[in-house]
Amino acid sequence: MDQGQIFQKLMELEKGQKRIQRALDALLERGGPKKWLDTCDMKEMFHISKSTLYRLKKDEILIPVKLGKKDLYKRVDVEKAMMIKALADSEIKGVRK
Image (cartoon, rainbow, N blue to C red):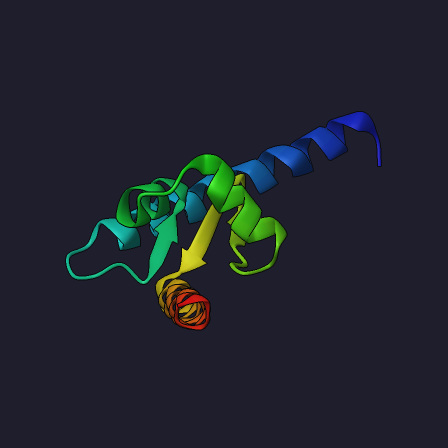
């Protein structure tokens, strides 16, 4: 494969990725609760900082799905993780008393 063919393939892949991104954005904008949350949604919804979200990813408490450069989180997984964390925090506080 020469450079021209490689470049052409890369352009095709980029167009496909943009098409998928537009489709996903359209799905996310529809009414009703979102099934997927992006980084901004996570920060707003749970009042957490970017570094906290990074730590949750690094510790594998939340495992995002990558779409291009965007991290997406399943709402169900996020809610489960938050419930587990809340229970763990309440148990720790109960032991300390």
